[in-house]
Image 1 (cartoon, chains in turn blue, green):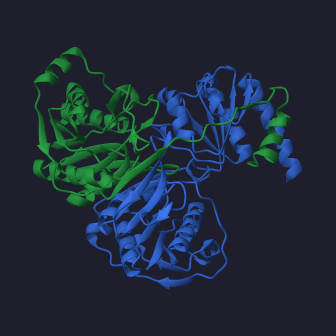
Image 2: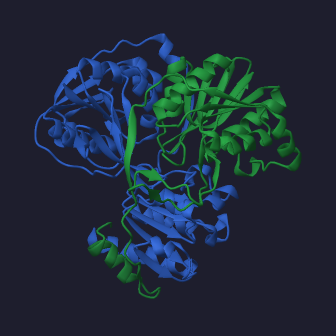
Image 3: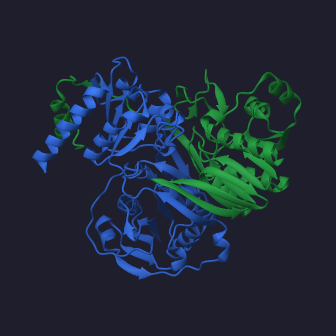
Length: 322
Length: 248
């Protein structure tokens, strides 16, 4: 028996989320008195995982699995879980992990809890705390099946360094042609930009920016902070910014360390989507904007003056702290 | 083409969330229920297939009689038939098993569900359903075309989008992007009148167990007051973010 964790790679390199799920898996394994086995696809090197608690890494090297395919990956992870006799399987909250979660849960006859925010409350009954009602509440969920599948919320557990060495083991799951009923034909992804999913800092702007032509300063602020850009629902509905930037209840969830909202009033649906961010800064000319009630820091005033000035201050700060 | 749209009956997005019975149950008092937004985008896309490609569109919900107004609304938007599986939707696995039975009995070619419901946010029903009935599956679907038995689906990935080809039968986990917000339809009087005469069939639940149960709820701790920084003193903001919040 062990805890199995799916550690995602991008071009053979582990994503930051992989280290977070590995850290989490270690905490679960400690509770259950067992070890952590990580499963990865075509990782260049697996050594880094040991620093976050993996005791063993099954590195699947298979050209058929070089690109993500939900069904084929779910099948391979299922075989890894069965080989390791894993009672708890852990995945992240990435688009890919959430894609394969339902398939994997049925394959393993596992009860699945998504958006889990902390180590299990108890091992028997197996109870986890997860967000519900789009971050307006938490739910304590008991999983009754023999095998449990846990989807860890992004940026909820953090990285916990551990010492040890992870033994890499080759693993060759069987791959069936029937796994490839969905074939990817094209991927359209900006490689030079930080994604909202991975970003530590997100700079988001709303209708207060008055028009798409004013986004230059938002992008510059994001650039200085190494942040991803995001926007409110009305902004994406009006076509000022692409849909992929829309954050909120019906858009993308944000769980960054720092969320800066500029010219966004803070409708309840928007706040629900960004609530998991740790520190929120609001810049708005309306001191009565509801967002100020949800924020940690606020500046009341004209964004068109504050943002350029903030960019300068941050550049100075970076120069001093470089 | 036979389309089934899975409809979750959820609190309106503006609802205040409260709990009752010692924080073990969602308090529905004063809450308005709507079609789950992710499902509504899918339903609207299904209407497009109905109008342009002659598809039939059924809608289904797993829930008690109190969810029927939500199904009637889907009929008023244009669905042909509604099915209600008469059972409390205890968890995602239970719902997926009920939907799998409905899907198999009805022989549907395309099943559209929302990527997640905005109440419990499980995000598991579409994938579980696809696996249970052996259909192809695309999640976080933001574009869908069907030509005969072939389909092209675009999904949102972290930082972009990905397009795939696949074939029917197909399950998609839909969301905004399947249609635009401005394409969503508000039922008109004629639609509402017609919906009253359309069939709403109640079927009994199949024997299935839930894998999990929500035993208790908790609201986030109340937030401390916002710290206001003067617009003329942004050095202080930078300093607070660095020394106090430690995020830069």
